[in-house]
Image 1 (cartoon, helix red, strand yellow):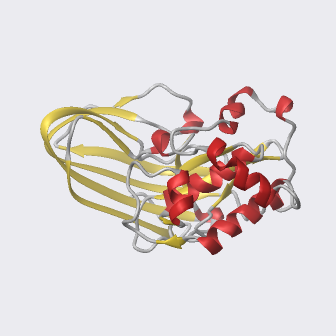
Image 2: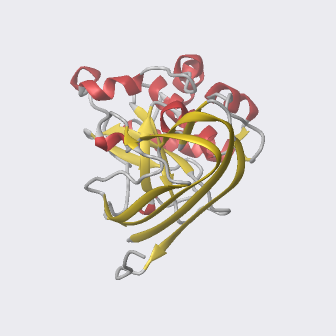
Length: 266
């Protein structure tokens, strides 16, 4: 599946500020970047931030005044249908060192606070991938998708108590449930063709059968169409734009569509 991405962000910076951008599609076996271009107007140098490539490409820049950031890409998503039913959870002592982090509580995913509920609600029956599906189904049935009810300070516990939120809140809650019962889970920012209105999307990856597998607890997107941007512990690590200073959003548009296989870079 070839996915076409066209994102544009416009901000006003009253004072110059350092900015980290995480807008570029991850290059990996399950998604091949045919073409992509990240640019700023007015032009400002971009410097690749240190970090493993498979976690996402982060770029440093400096911004001041009126700035427009654009990202265009064509990506061939090759992962196929994602089905985690029946997959097993590896023993903790067998986890790779870079997976252990995703068993721990984090800023927005307070798995320790949600552990009593998760352990009582989800630990008596299904295991592994089936258990993750059960947790995701519980969130889908019990949460209301409600833009505007959460903000940058809202945690998984807040969302669990409100039973409302948007994609990041659904993802934080599922991640917390998974970690609470011993399943490594992490957050993924993504471009998704099916999101309406179009926007950046947040989903979850779980470590089962010694590999990461995508799951969208909102059910707004198909996992086989997602273009992953960045992965991390929670929203702290995957923000598409981190500003060390202050800025005012002027406008934002994100257009993601399925393109014909022969579509060429523009």
